[in-house]
Length: 82
Image (cartoon, rainbow, N blue to C red; front, side, top):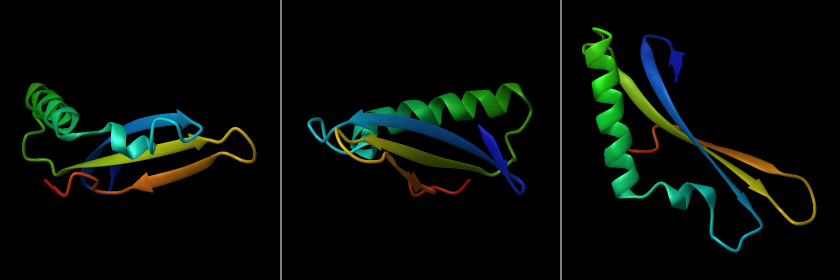
């Protein structure tokens, strides 16, 4: 979790070696997104932060078999700003 201005940002980091299993961002499917949203809402409720805007970002790290790793940040990846 991080802060960006007044928003709480929940960050899911996924790493893939090579391209065999697809892009890292593809691992965050609808089921995983729903789970992360539920966890974030429970967290903000417990901390008295229910009125705080929240955002979900994904950081995808690709580790190719040859060459340099690449990092991609998908800001507001779930299409929801809280």
